[in-house]
Length: 291
Image (tube, rainbow, N blue to C red; front, side, top):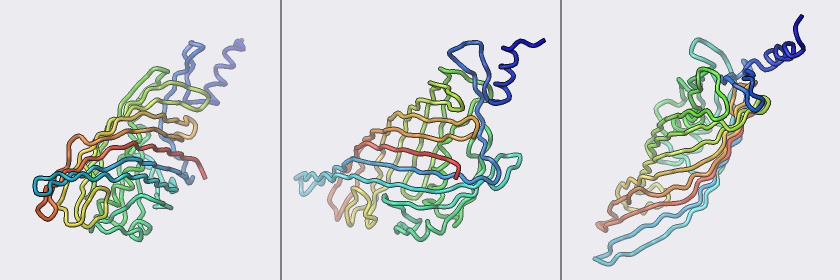
């Protein structure tokens, strides 16, 4: 005859297949895999708030002139991903561009074109453990369009193969590149709580970004007639992420990342030497749910 405790243990396994009782009343072991149920549509709501300044110093016939430009940009987006199939690689998601407000989006010819993005789409492949393993973007060949869709999924970490408990940690590195940006990021995930279906992580981020500022683009810190200038920025931030074991998705991410120039971008405008630096704070929030 089975004990009542044994019956409750089997009930836990049936109701929560991703959760294993460790024998410690203060902790569960969990195993996480990316799910995305076939045929389901997932909606993402995201927002970014960047407050900073650009400092430009110009050498005018031996007399330095300093200009500071403050910036306060808010951008937001709502987009969907539909699970349209599954194969040996993982789940295939059909992704639409959705609605985007604020910020700046640039096409390969360096002209802002909302039309190009609004007509774009992608199909991405999400492995149960490895996250993003493949993508096909339309229209093809535009680095800025490709970066937009890769940025939506590249951050998803490679998940541990076995069960993990409170205090576990793992890292994730990824890079992205377009005609205007080159970004390399390392995130460190620290498991701080398991509650019901939800696993909460503290996330530490170190990121470097090379921003290309050039003439005629209207980007922050650029000057008309200015030759190409590269500015290397360092981001170091912290935040949280919540994974839903039953759904097999991250449902929340939020954080704060201060940034500053590692060195000054140097160029010339009509023969005048120019140095540019940037600093500020980027705040972000991201939520995913079934429609």
